[in-house]
Length: 153
Image (cartoon, rainbow, N blue to C red; front, side):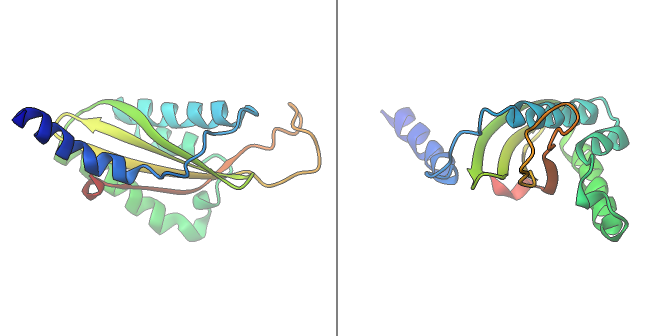
């Protein structure tokens, strides 16, 4: 009985941080493209390719502009420091996704290091378009915010 109580108490904070109004990501193909970019990002980080990881993630992103260069450099430095502090990346797990309106998607992952898990949050925006999505007009979602924080657990 004591173990069940401890287990229940440990799960309460996890249940609290998942938004009750979270909706599944749309099935219009965006989720697959975004999911692929995030997985490629983590895979590159796991292999130690920090620049490659961020280059792929930030395709057409306003975060990749010169006025954001110092913030991006700081994020890269913190990412490298996390690896030094928490050890090797073991794997990752998507734990939350929320569609906000028709064109914004926020996805959260747990990146599991050897010594500590870290929450990563990605917000993507797809500019509304009157043209249909096609190979010539992919209407790609762009990353508008990325953050991670080891203290979120």
